[in-house]
Length: 131
Image 1 (tube, rainbow, N blue to C red):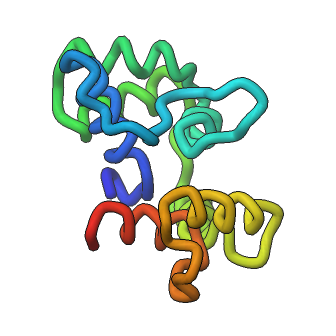
Image 2: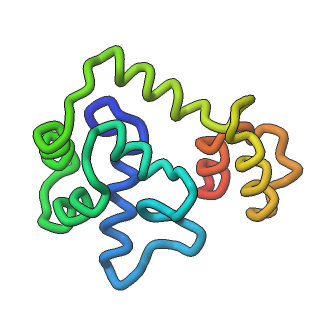
């Protein structure tokens, strides 16, 4: 978490990895994918910033916290309750909601289709990354 926000730091790490000669691992999504909502897109919409502008700011350098502060100035600063709701939504995404089929599909693609403990996209990310 950065500034109490789930997902934000992960997006910054992905932007940095992609900039280093395409070192973003295969299967990782970056930015907005035509016709699909990604976590990157949702974070940017939540903060009121454009993904391309965020990417450019990340590549200028600075700490994750400095970049988050830039987002607050360029977009909007959510209050504590909005952040709590955001974190709850993101941490449960894919569990008994409209994204459940997407979790199942991505589990299969990752060879984890039989893992009943994977219920959310966060669970899937943890499993794929060995946590």
